[in-house]
Length: 322
Image 1 (tube, rainbow, N blue to C red):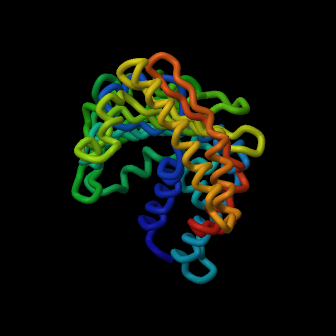
Image 2 (image 1 turned 30 degrees about the vertical axis):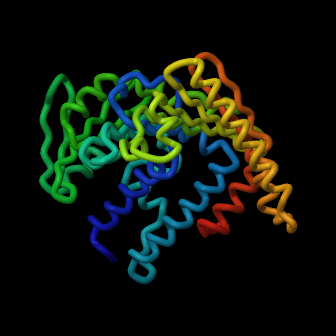
């Protein structure tokens, strides 16, 4: 069998994988300087049909990865990984937030916040086996650090209410700052699993500079202040809402008119097709169903997409093994 360090690496990968797949909730305090914030309510995601299907795929792929690491009949099981970590990464991760201050150098300024259940399991003990591991006390918190690909990564594990919150970043001061605001992080991730609550929330405070240089998009971006995207499951559909905040109500109304114009153009283009492709027809129907409204300096666009259509896309285009 491979070394325990290889198994530890896989176990930590299983812990972090949900962060890389999905992102949730209510206020964005503490991340005012971030260009992009992605948050996910994993409890809410796991309760959706899409979430159940994707979690099953993740477990299947984890078993396959474990089998490749194993040696004959000595392949470690998911139960053994659970025992190794001290908790089940597929069930105990309650939510996560990833914030990036600079998209041009995300690895230098990204911070990840992971909300666990009542225990962080064996994580603090496993950290002792990481390269160049060190720890120090500051502001009543233990700051852990270790080397990863030549960079020092810092982390803090805090008790917040009934939950453990893990904060990780390459910037020690950022880790301390966010850790001290862990209560706000709980609100940001969201505690509710109520039906129709978003399981994904993405906020973009600043778009890449190159988008403003040329092309039609520059006309929009120059008065765009922020973009927020939310995804929830409502029955057998995904409810997707996009909110654009601009500098004034006049520009908001302009964008509303432009969006409605594009909807009409899509319908007209489809009507000119001699052969009506079934998939294109579905896309045209979705476009027709987009609801666009403007209120004050915000424009909202909402659309519902059947979960079956999303699963079919993931199965046929992304090749996920449903």
